[in-house]
Amino acid sequence: MAVNRIPCGWCGKIARIDLTSKQWTVEIPDPETLMKFIGGRGLAGFYLRDHITLNWDDPDMPLLLFTGPLVNTPSPTSGRMTIMSRSPLTGTIGDCSVGGSLGVQLKSAGFDGIIITGKSDLPCGIEIEDHAIRFASAESVTGMSTSDACRIFKPKGAVAVTGPAAERGVLYSNVIIDGHYAAGRNGLGLVFASKKLKYITVRGTGKTGIYDSEELRRAKEDILRLVAASPAIMGHFGISRFGTGALYDLMDARCMMPTDNFRNSRFHCASSMNAVAYAKQYHPVKTGCRGCHIRCKKKNRDGIHIPEFETMSHFSALLGNCDMKTVIEANRICNDLGMDTISAAVTLACYAEITEKRLSPEQILRLLSETGTQKNPGRDLGVGAARMAQQHNRPEFAMAVKRQELPAYDPRGAYGMALAYAVSTRGACHLRAYPISHEILRKPVATDRFSFEGKARIIKINEDVNAVVDSLTVCKFVFFAATLEEYARVFSAVTGLQVYGQDLLKTGERICYLERMMNAQNGFGKADDDLPSRFFETPGYISPTKKNDPINRDRFMRALADYYTVRGLDENGMPVLSRAKELGLV
Ligand code: SF4
Image (cartoon, rainbow, N blue to C red; front, side, top):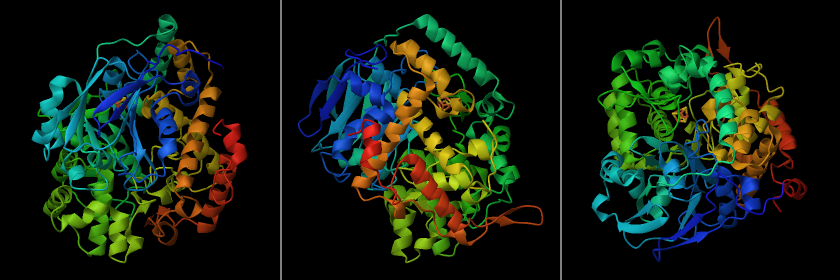
């Protein structure tokens, strides 16, 4: 569809901010580009493309923060946004979808996105308010925890801040939004620090134009009805009531709980460390991202945050820890220092295996603090599991793909997840494709979790859907109930552009292919689309009634070849000109 003006939904303004000169300008995006990449992950990828071969700490490497057209409208779960750059941890494209209020405030302030380049001479902050941007000194908050810094800056609106871990060079440093929402994975906090950027605040009062408010209301009601009927979201044991920790028992029951650095996949303390146990102990209430009615985040009246499933699982089973308070405290330390909890826990588990130690709760917490502040022996852990294991000549102990540590689903219990980890464009990830939905939750259709049959196509479609979801900047959790068909209707109501679910899916395919093209430019190919050898050599769990055998490597390689075929890559996983042309990328 040809468009020659900025449609409703977008502000039509992108700020280019140069930290070297402390100057900023406004760019008006091409409407055709908005149609092709939408916003969030897609649009940020479009602007990253020409710079992807630069080192992550090159001043010219852009740091991109992008919202989408549904943000700051009543569209369900649309208060999210993307932060993107090249990853210090993996060297691939690095991005994260994050909640909180930053996306809504940025849009209200009049910007679809900001592109930050250059490097400040001194620690600085960027303060955005209603179409205006100013630069401020951050020297007084250098070295400060993310919670303290967020408290100071809260009066200025939404806050994105890095912690001491980023300032000290931890490769899995993250960015904390509004004191709690983590833009984790990939080490994007370190890109902030490389530019001497400590924080961004944003406040806006503007409204986002909506093409047809009445149609948006009807489309929204349809989605809310689907969400209300979803057991996974609103059911008695769903994520609205228990948070993502609702998955904890299920993963253990399916022998998929990564335990002792993935040497086992069942955890003997699971029944006393699940989400119900946290609820009994801490009595949390619901909280969540701006404008979301699901409110899957949990915190109690004393301000204690209940960890997400990945954190809950990795700081218990993965480290053999049966103390709930240690998990809560590990989560707090990681957030305060600004470190990704998944990478921190997997790196600790790798360290425990290398040193042949079982870490006590005190050792877990001390090592985490030392990692974030880069004191010995925690200093070694700031490079992540893959580099640390390599330094100790035990690369087989690093549970990582493309140097990014694995989330909390043991791939020997769900072969689609095995393939998804391997081919993800940002290293091991459960958010690029989430075949757990089919293989474990049995939605929208059940598949055999111990088979690769049909998985290549499922992963490809999952990836395409999630790429467009991250570009509309809505929440993936709502897709346990809704589909792109409902969101196409929302998109059309907001923008006035008639699209269907299949159009959005094609956009997702374009975004994924562009990411493969960018990674290929940095040399990523078939050798990187692989899993740690442990998963092909040793079983996860075996008992008289249940077993998770090692994955058959030949079948995995055949599934990988199938994936390359359906994704339109060559036999080495590299992009081909004809598919790139077909998708409008060259
Ligand atoms: S479901 Fe949870 S993560 Fe998703 S938008 Fe709502 S509060 Fe945020």
